[in-house]
Image 1 (spheres, one colour):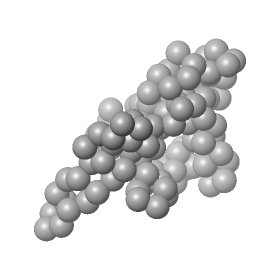
Image 2 (image 1 turned 90 degrees about the vertical axis):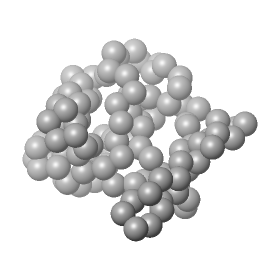
Image 3 (image 1 turned 135 degrees about the vertical axis):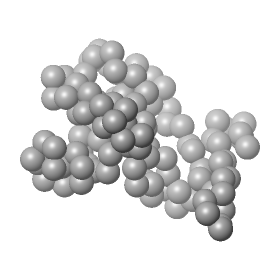
Length: 110
């Protein structure tokens, strides 16, 4: 179900129960980054996410990214939030606005 605000409600079965996810597109995610393309480090994260998704068929958890780059959990979270703010990726959110695990999607990788 798509709302006039651009939000989208997705209801899907998962085993013996149903899950509802509200996708709220960020106005910033649709806007091109002010600085142009990603930095070298941001490019490394984007490439890792794409390779991981291609190999395993699911987005990496932040702990997978943390293990790969040998950085702290807050560093990974900050980078993912930065990439999201710049419009390079997005994450699904539940009814309460919390991010859903393994829901990172690459939107663009200039």
